[in-house]
Image (cartoon, rainbow, N blue to C red; front, side):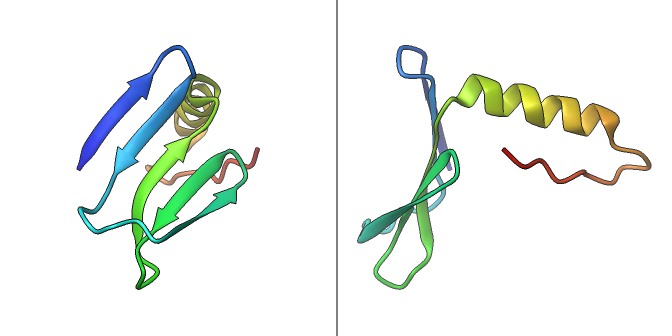
Length: 72
């Protein structure tokens, strides 16, 4: 797994697979790149600083080790 952050564009990129990218879909504030077989290859989180802040707040509010769903 490779993780890269572009501060100028505020985009967090997470490569989850070495497979070749076939197509991409925008899902909320994320762009998910898929292989020909439909498996995720690369995640681009747009407005990453806000995403991380929201995720951190949600985790801090969670109780008993359970995670809360965050919708943007």
